[in-house]
Every structure is written in structure tokens, then in C-alpha cells.
Amino acid sequence: MEKKKKQKKSLQQLNLLDRFLFAEAMEDAEIMQSVLEIILGKEIVLKYLPQVEKEERVSPLYRYVRLDVLAEGGDNTLYNTEVQQKNTGNLPKRGRYYQAMIDCKLLEPGEVDFNEMRDVYIITIAPFDLFGYGKYMYTFRMKCDELLELNLADGAVRLFLNTRGTNADEVSEELIELLKYMEHTDEATSASCISTRIHEMQKKIEAIKSNEEVSVRFLKEYEALVLERREAREEGREEQLYRQVLKKLQKGKHSEVIAEELEEDLETIQRLCRAVEETDKKAASIGKEEGLEENIVR
Image (cartoon, rainbow, N blue to C red):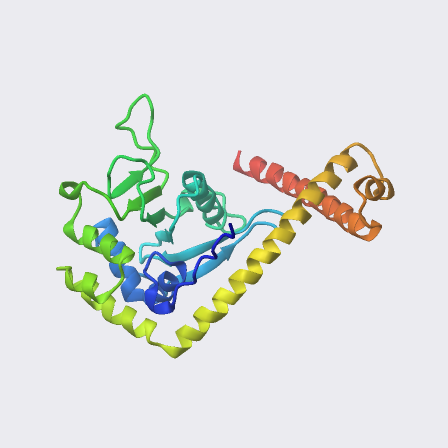
């Protein structure tokens, strides 16, 4: 039986858990500020306009990440907010990777005082309960196993929000309304909310959905996504081939032999061999720099 293709949503059907609408909405500093304030339960002043779909990478040879929305508070705290429609089974470790990618950019070259690192919040909002305890929000900070009251105070906080929580007596009513509205972003849901901030949010969302330029961007992004997925399949094959070449180089084999064994053209294998050599040179260079920095710190 032929599998049915998933029907593409229209712009009007999107909710704030859809990355496109979320990014469009959170470019508005007032919306982003309201979302953060409702989630964290405190006043937040943003220093700059939020950055949407910001790409972070440390090397072309390592996996990059595309952050949904990155915002910076007036106290220099960074807030990375992500929406996730499906449970991919890797969200805790993905959050760890995102935090690492952000952390590695927080110190200027030559800075030796790690206390200069800014506080970071990694926030994930999803329409499912990742941990199964019925909570609207799960907040994680580093703690000591032997002394649970002892907080490491490293400035990193990771939050997982569940739009379908059940512990209404443990969180604010406005947070529950926000999460409900993010999953059902429409006039009826907004009207059922008491929060004036959500009412204002709905007005702006309506304007975004009726904007012709946004509609064009939505169509282009959908087309780009189809192309990106096609390219990803090709890149996956390239990565696999790179690993095979690396293993054979480690065994002392030359490019001609590798090309013959892998049944690939010599030009492709030679290009991958050069990539391996460049990676080795960079790794050696980084090792020397780290050695120098360690000596300076000591």
C-alpha cells in the first residue's frame, strides 16, 4: 500500500511550536521578552533584538547547530529558546551540545578568567512530557549527588517545558495559558486566556500570518527544506566515505589503493585525504595553543 505524503501546513495553520512561525514571532523583542518573563517568572530587559535561526559551528568538519532564537538580557544573560514538535529521543544530550556550542563563544581570545562566562538558559518547549511526571516545566541545574542542596552555580540552566502538563497548582496560570496558546495559536485560544500579554501576542501573530512578505518567505523556506533534506542524504554518504578513508589512511594506505578498494574515483579520494590532513594539522595546532594557555593559567 502506497504511503500517503504528509500534507504541508498553510501559514494560517501554523502554531508557535512550528519553527517558522516561532522565529517570525520571536524577532519581535516584545513577544520574546513576554515569553521569557512568563516562563522564568521575573522581569527581563533585552539588550538587543533576538537573533533567530543563528548558526553555530566550531569547524566545517564538525556538526553545526541552528539555534531557534538567541536573546541577550541587559544583565548579559543569554537565553536560547527552542521549540520541538516531536520527541526525537535525544533532547537532553542535544541541549547539552547546544549549551557547549554557546559556551565556547563566551570568552574572548586571550581571556583567562572563566568567571567572565555569562549565565546561559537553554529552554526547550514541546507538546509532550519528556520525563513522564506530568510537569509543565522541568528545571535542571548542576547539583552534588552527596549534598543535594549544594548547587554548582556554574551559571547554566536547562528548562524543558511541556504544553500538556497536569501540575496546575505548581506553576503560574499565565504559564499554563502561554503553553496552551503556543500549541493552539488562534483567536479562540487567545480569547480564553486571562493574560493581557497573550492577547497582545495574538494581535501580532495575526498580523504576521496576514503579511504577504511573510507568506513568500514561508513558501521559500518550505522549498529550501525539501532541498536541504535531499542534500543531507548526500552529505551523509560523504561523511561515511570520509570515515572509511580516515581508517584506511591510519593503516598507512595510499590514495590510489583506497580508491581502488572503495571503488571510488581517485579525485574524490584525494580530496578526502587532503581533508583528513587539514584536520590533523588543525588538531595539532589547537593542542599547542591549549598547552600554552594551560601554562599561562597555571
